Amino acid sequence: MADHILVIDQGTTSTRAIVFDGEARRVAIAKREFAQHYPAPGWVEHDPADIWRDTLAVAREAMERAARPIAAIGITNQRETAVVWDRATGEPIHRAIVWQDRRGADTCRALKGEEATVRARTGLLIDPYFSATKIAWILDNVAGARARAERGELAFGTIDSFLIHRLTGGAVHATDVTNASRTMLFDIHRGEWDEELCHLFRVPAAMLPQVHDNAHLYGTTAAGLFDRPLPIAGVAGDQQAALFGQACFARGMAKSTYGTGCFLLLNTGEEAIASEHRLLTTPAWRSGGTTTYALEGSIFVAGAAVKWLRDGLGVITHASQTDDMATQVPDSHGVYMVPAFTGLGAPHWDAQARGAIYGLTLGATAAHLARAALEAVAYQTMDLVDAMVADGGERPAILRVDGGMAANDWLCTFMAGMIGTPVERPHDLETTARGAAFHAGLATGVWSGTDELGRLWQRERCFEPSMADDRRIALSAGWHDAVRRTLTGD
Ligand SMILES: Nc1ncnc2c1ncn2[C@@H]1O[C@H](COP(=O)(O)OP(=O)(O)O)[C@@H](O)[C@H]1O
Ligand SMILES: O=P(O)(O)OC[C@H](O)CO
Image 1 (tube, rainbow, N blue to C red):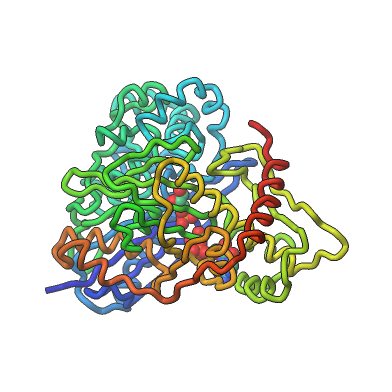
Image 2: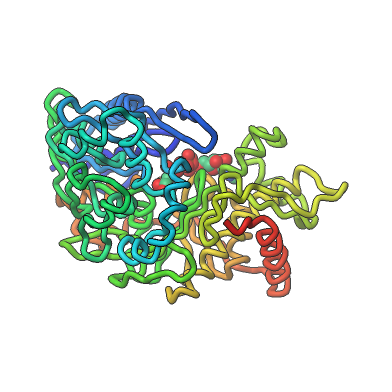
């Protein structure tokens, strides 16, 4: 029996395809980076044609390298990013508006009075990060689009949905519960689209895809795309997929992914905890109609601050150098970096805040800046964990980390110290793709259930907390002072 799973991981800056074997080991990978478009300050767009072209290319390449029969396809993706296409031709009517895009800010500000309702139903805050205002913008700015959408001629989808549509030759318009939950149009308690929210955000319900469990037979790839038609059997937004891929199946387990940004998710079981600290409540997965929920803290800048040290300031040539630089100095010399380059996410949600560096003296060096950039990531993680605990979530006994930046040993050690919890790193840092593979493998009988999947998770290293309390308290106070000075109150 074929037991290999092909996962398409469509991220913000690259599209990857990874083949996993029946032991969830990676046997082949192919990757392509694609163009980012910034048509105006605060706007970010992707061309869906690029995404489709790269998806096909990397999927074919990875399958060829693996040279094994594929049992099923899993899809995981950057969330919230919105595509609107013509149902008749399958052609997008505008470029995709990316999750980082802030053009819906004015609309969101005008609707702030409705926040309590939106929060109660969707688990989200009113923010341009989510899809709803992006869809409305396309309908209002492409000639004739709104009328066509109302007549049912246009379809909306997040990237997973767009890819399912393309892969099935236009036969299927569907998404999964995790992607649906990031639109601001989905009631996470009833598990359905919400007509009133569609009305509020001016998105015709006729445009929306059907919503399914994560492990589900979404459709079969169209003839001619691959050697033979393949079932698409698992779909999840990338951060929820990472929680699943990190085998955080039990309530109280948490993972944090450090890529461009950082996303920390805590499994809260079948309870959808309403946050009082501006965290998001989000479905982690749905199986047999039963939803497991998570509390999510989203930080917009993590690895991006290190990238800025490299590309913006030129003080490093490779991201991994920050590990040695931070080790070289005994402390940050009083330097704090608040990486609010694109505003601050959870728990502050201050869209107008901008990055700041405090405490500079003539003694500050590039090593102190590098250390301050890494420390900021740990401080923000600490703030998220504290907010989750204050919301009634359990303090995670262990934090599992992944993503490119989790390769940084110094960061993992410092983070364990600041949050007072062991930080565990798995062998496979591609946990996002792994999570989608798990869903697809469950749907097709490659794996029997979460007990078996839990046994496939392998620890590479555990970083134990070893920081003295007085040091942690002093650093934390310095960080919070820096954040206070950065917030705009907007
Ligand atoms: N060893 C490292 N130390 C610090 N930062 C790193 C390291 N390796 C990668 N990064 C940062 O992590 C990010 C890359 O992680 P990745 O998971 O590939 O991101 P994404 O999928 O969001 O594009 C980059 O922003 C890079 O600056
Ligand atoms: O593409 P990534 O890995 O940066 O993830 C993006 C998130 O899904 C945005 O919510």
